[in-house]
Amino acid sequence: MRQVPPNYFDGRIAQDYDADSAAMFESAVLDPTIDLLAELARGDSALELGIGTGRVALPLRQRGVVVHGIDLSPAMIEQLRAKPDASEIAVTIGDFATAKVGRTFKLVYLVYNTITNLTSQDEQVACFQNAADHLESGGHFVIEVFVPTLQRLPPGETVRAFHVSPTYLAFDEYDIATQTLYSHHYWVDQAKVKTFSAPYRYVWAAELDLMARIAGLHLVERWGTWRKDPFTSDSSAHISVWQKGLLE
Image (tube, rainbow, N blue to C red):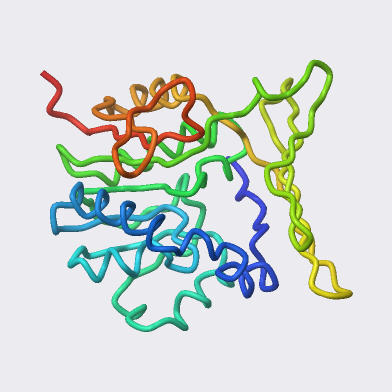
């Protein structure tokens, strides 16, 4: 039996999560996300894997979609519950690769690189199967995830900074042998320094497509952004959509 993965989003991280991720709440980022998810949910129902503090779930619920969530961290759900209208969203505490809700949905989605929180291939495969188990026939599974930036690493280097400012430093440390990266974050507030580090398993688009096929899903769309810009070799992320059934 597989063990429940570690919970890196404890009380301190959960308490500051929204503030530390403020850019992800900006309308230019969030509105296209909600537009596309609401379109795929067709005004019906959706399951968010790794619902967190409700950044996506709450505005999606406001669009008339019935939203259920799964999350491993009670502290993150506590932050969600403190927000207006959060009582309309049901939440199951558990590992989103295996936890069951007991019903099916038009849409299952994983956003903001959350698939990489599962740090083994077996866990990611299990997640696809769990998503498929929660989908109605014809329903869609959506993942938003970054494209690994290995091509930007000079030979012999393993570290790439992706944000550098006087108050915030963030860099990824790649271990190519295990397909793992360790993401390190440092926030500076006057004389105080707050840190966060956690492991993630980066994953390629083609690998995700194979996981989907194993779970009985097939790819129907892949874009470079939530605005449906084309996915190209220069894209830094992709929005992939797989469907259950209906393949002719």
